[in-house]
Length: 363
Image (cartoon, rainbow, N blue to C red; front, side, top):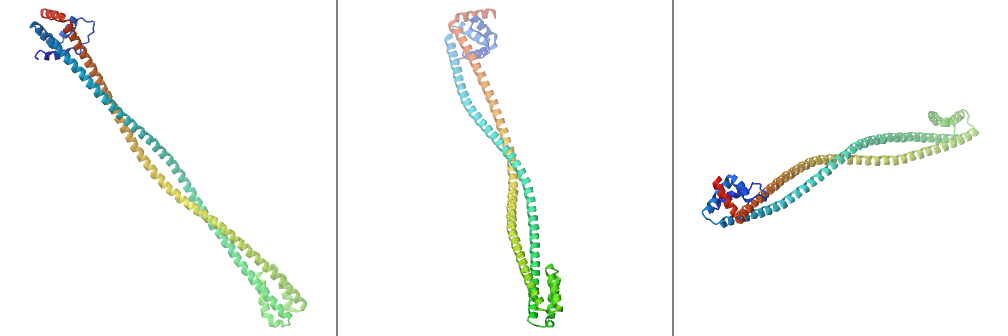
């Protein structure tokens, strides 16, 4: 066993030697002899040969070393294959994660941008709707004031017509009393009140009547009475027709206002609801934008972490691959050395012996 151990050093010594198959055994051994470990091994071999020790013992050891190297390479291949599968799985997961984060970033960016655009449009529209509400309320107030004025005018004119009709009726009664033979003196007080009321109205319609009544006060005759009664009937008919016309106009204006106010009220309700909707949408848009920005920042960080992890895994894989290839290359070189040494020891023992003899003489 003491002679076997130095052989391991020999194998390590020649592992880095770069030789070709065309070199002679003496040249191979000469290269081994140049290395300090090789020199020691050759000294052991020289001693082995000098004492007549079996070369087969060294050959068995070299076979064991070759077997060990092949076994180590198989284990390394298995580990490399397992690591490669695991690495590919990790890479695939990381690439999938990166793709997911990239998709999320695009989606969140689009959401942020589209919501920002929608927010701007909503803010513009809410200002327009607010202005429309103000205009609607002004229109309602103006139209309400106009309607109130129309109604007040009708009430005033209708009251005037009622007073005028009452005055005409009172005048008709007085004239009828005169026609029946009642003395004017008995009716004078009532006559003067009616005459004053008709004069106060300043209506052109009453001017002929006032003149006729004035003449009747100075001279009562049946012909004048009949004429005045006919005039009173005509005037009353015109007043009733005028009052009816005013009432029809009032009813029409009232109906129009009812329809118009209904439209304005419905429009106001719609605008108020639209404004409330827009204001609520603006709040939601701002929340959505804020959340999108925060999620975008998170996804960006997640993406950077995933990309960093991928880069680390790729570097680790490259290092492992380089290490595997280097170790594989080293084992191949070692196996080549073992094979050459076996060749020298088995097929060309005479050359080895000759070299060792020369070595002893020269070195």
